[in-house]
Length: 203
Length: 147
Image (cartoon, rainbow over all chains, first blue to last red; front, side):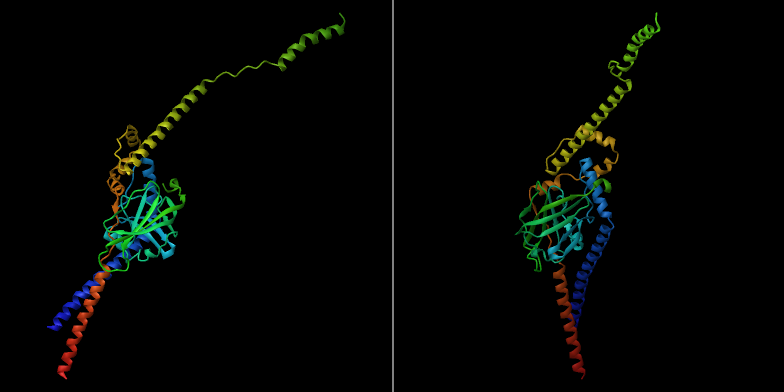
């Protein structure tokens, strides 16, 4: 009897462990793909073209979920990741995700980027007010300075559209914790300086 | 008539002609017919450019309004743009509506970013360990019994 229970636990545990490791592996593979796509400037050019078209045609093009839309660098926590469109499980399993409907980094409005607390933003709590963040989103290359850091409830409506360019990073809180997260860590940054890339060259 | 007087007379007669050749009155150039044609073309280009600028500004305003969640009426300028650029149809098909940005305007919750994977991995590892322990204990007991 004990042997059977042991065997059952062994199999179930192995399956659970394999699933978790497999998901991490898939995420890493997708992150590599996104990085390659970005480095090859495919995503960059596509985004630039989309921005250019949006500006010239008065419409906003939404990249498909999972497409690389930006790059984010936070020197304080040695983070350099490609941001994917969307904040669903598949996107966040691979890379930080851009909240659809929010602005893109560098555009007027609030650009919201989220990531898992146990993955890319597992050291977001180490970011302090005054730290620098760099983003690149095809047509924009921006440096940001962190202006606020706060913890809100998971049901609090803490993300608002802003008239000026704003970068908001979110992750679950507390960071080093297993299970559902009752709160969210919100880091807000404002642009330091802006370099507008040549849209014409991209289009 | 002496020859000297003839020379003086001829000088008096020829000098004004030479002077007239040197000091002519200003005659404004005639207006060319082609200039007016160029002016018309230039005026048309300016008008077209102004129309284009108005079109872009109108559409930009539409986009800004849409970003702000305000419904903006469609304009004639937008229609003319669609006619001018057939690619705009493809863009239009995938253009974003204002609903998402409107949701953000009213305040949105931060996305759920708590992954279950660490918990699953921990449970899996513990379960696996327990299973291995039980299997090992069962094996040891059997060995002891055999001995």
